Structure formats: C-alpha cells, structure tokens
Length: 361
Image 1 (cartoon, rainbow, N blue to C red):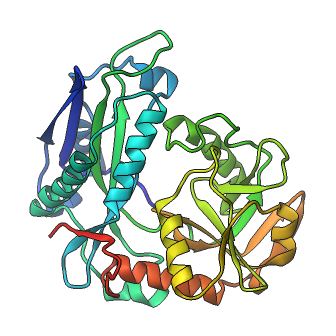
Image 2 (image 1 turned 60 degrees about the horizontal axis):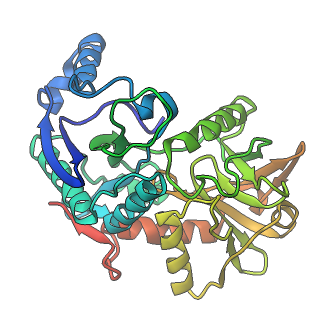
Image 3 (image 1 turned 90 degrees about the vertical axis):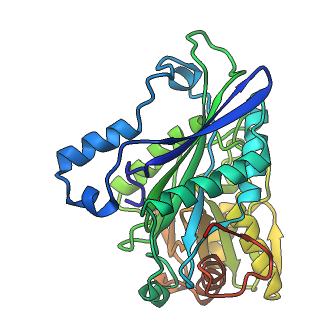
C-alpha cells in the first residue's frame, strides 16, 4: 500500500479565531531516520502514535461525529539534481480554499497554505526525513517512484449536535509514499455504488465523499480487480471517476476524452495538467460526458489520474459481468508518453517550462 501512518516529525497547525488565522510548527518526538528504522515494531508504533496525538484538540467534534472536513493531497518530489520540489501547490491551495468555502468554513489563505507546505518539507528534510532521487525509477517511467506526501486537512472545533465548523484547525502532515496501485493488476470493475449526487459535495474534496469510494474499491479488490469506476447517479450510464482519481479514455480515433467537470466530479490538478500536456502534443482533448457503451466500444487506451495515481493504466473494464480489454490488455503507447512527460517534469528530468514546480531545497 502506498500510504502508511509514518508521519515525519514536523507538523504545521493553524487555527482561525474571530476571522483571523494563526499558525505554528510543531516538532513531535523523533530520532534520526536511521535510528527509527532500527527500532522494534512496537517501539516504532508507540513513537508514531505520539506524533498523531494532540491533547489540546477535542475528540468529539463535527469532524469525528459527522465527517465535516476537507483535505488536499500533494507531493514534494525528489529532483534529479538532488533537491525537492512541490508540484503546483498554488492549485492545491485554491482548491482547498474552495472546498472550505463549499463546507461553509472560513477559507485558509492561499499564501499561508503554500508557505506552510514548503516549510514543513524543508524542516523535515533538515532533520533527515525525506527521500532521494533514484535513477532506477526511470526504467518504468516512475511508476514505483517515491516522494514526500503532504496531507493538509481541516479538523472542526468541539461539538456534538449537527452543525457547521466556524473555527476549524488546518493541519499539514508529511509522510513518505510509494506506488499507489499494485503492479499485479490493472483491471477495473464498474461498481453499482454511487459516489456523488447532483447538488451534493462531489466537487469538494470532502472527507465524507471517500467512504463510498473505500467501500466500492474494497469490493472490487475482493473480486480480483485493481480499481473501481463509478457511473453517474441519475442515468447510470455516464462514467464519472475512479475510486479516488479522474479517468481518461484515448479513443481509436486519436481523441482523448475525460468526463466534463460538474458538481459530482472532483476537479483534479493532475487531470488539468494532463489535459494541457496532451494538447501541447497536438492531441484533441474533449471534456464531455462519455457513456459506458461508448467507452467500451471506442477506447484504445484508458488510464486514471491523480496525485497518487499519476497516470496509471486500466487495461480492462468489466461492466455487467462482461470484461472488455483495451490495447490487448497491455499499457498503451500514449499512456506511457503522457506519464513520461508528466513525471519527467515532476522529478526534474524534463525542463519545467510551465512553472509548475515550487522549489523547496
């Protein structure tokens, strides 16, 4: 599994009171990375638990009781020259602000978001908690590459009754992360579950949205698949997303299709980046509804996108018991090309002509 509860020592925490935000960097108990790796599993677990406990924050709150929270996910990527850089943190900052406003929370300032992300990574790296570039990652276009994952999230103030959060905390943790999807399978199952409904919170990166996603993905895994794919709630025919990622279809005609944004689809930052990169390559990219029948009949290659997923191929799609393979069950040339370009920029192999990277060190 890509993610593990193995947070780095430096955490950022901010609180809004009376409409004003104030933040602080907290340094939790730690040893050197080498000393921590040498600890017993029990001792390491106790150390990790101590990093994730805050005695001055309420256990009973609108987040723990009702899932009222939103979050972001972004990476600090080791660069080929030895440094670290964040990928498009300004876009995460803007989406985080929109999510908070969508949940009627006071938005966290974008400048504070970016500064805190940079500084937590920089301080943790200074303590030795970071990852380093490996040339071996280039062999499979960074499918198994490592990075520092940043998880900014909100935590509501104390409360029991159903209510909104007017004075939330914003917390940013760092943790190591590897490949998100297993290399053993690249098959996907169309789930009968519904991820989001019109007039709901599907467009917000809300914590509560991911309950259905987690259930649907587990059902897919138990059935032998890597991923699940959701259809729309009304017509039950238009493809919307994967369990926690956007989805693309490279048609036999050479056109790249991705479901158009609506209030049921999350506006992915990797999604937007891939659209721009594909157009730079002269590919016709269309954002529109795509029916499951069209996807099955006309798709040459299919892949999902996201901060964790990158551009990960889906080599088959099973719907109503029928399995359809794409590109002979193999990863397609276009998928590889777009991932090579995306990852090449992210890891400093290719020039960042778009100004997408924010240097940390």
